[in-house]
Length: 389
Image (cartoon, rainbow, N blue to C red; front, side, top):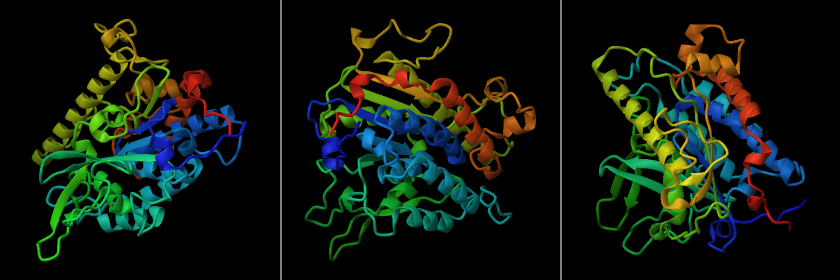
């Protein structure tokens, strides 16, 4: 079967046709686990659409959202990269960027050199490629947080967005932001990388207004699924897709649920980081609960022993969206169920770290194993198949 490739405006248009969202969590170098899951999703969807080697996830998904490491992957997917290309580049990027140094202990300064990350992002996306570039083949939503105002910022290439176009008076539109800079802002994890400055207003004769941005995981949206759903459906964001189980598909991919029992350094500054990580986990759990509450889902999991999986507890009585969630539980028992050969308790404990390049092959293996077990062609309703050209 052949299908018609669409541009960004066509993907994001509210035309009454079924729409598809892909949302990718943050999680540092654990993003390589997501890549393992995405490979199976790409394989399943390619086969569903005729097996064309040129098929890309940007052909299927109308909006790809990402936070932090998820933003790195999302932007590459939106540019039309195959998942295998992303896997190779991700492994290289992780080794080069996350090089530990005794001069950077993460207490008085960021642990890692952002110059290396910037160089890698410019290499991947192009130094002059903007968020509004025609190089992007589908909708892209990057989640970051403006630290100097305390505001979560969902930044998109939606051409109808209120803040997309540069306006008289010097306000720079989202569409003119360099793509690498937007992704860099989303990856500026506190203690790991310095904040990213982005010029918001540049008016002749006035001091520029510069925003200071940090990782989108410092907002409630380290998992950007709920924000992506709101962005696609709330009137203020000017996309306006209709809701319904046969109208809207949301596929959410995690970077591994960290083991809460993993011990961390008992240093005051570390407690602040750990508190943030704990809050991120709480937000992620709340999002999964809300999304299962408002959806029909082939992957619904037990929220807890009291709530169950919410299959019979739909808010409003009818699903607003079809929802799929794929993630790996990084606790020892769950890891060993996926890959029984992993015997080392020390190795398994280390998998919860977000900045350990040596763990990337194992994390990718876990993502691949989870996908082999749980990603099925039947998860993707036929209502969302691409229409033939």
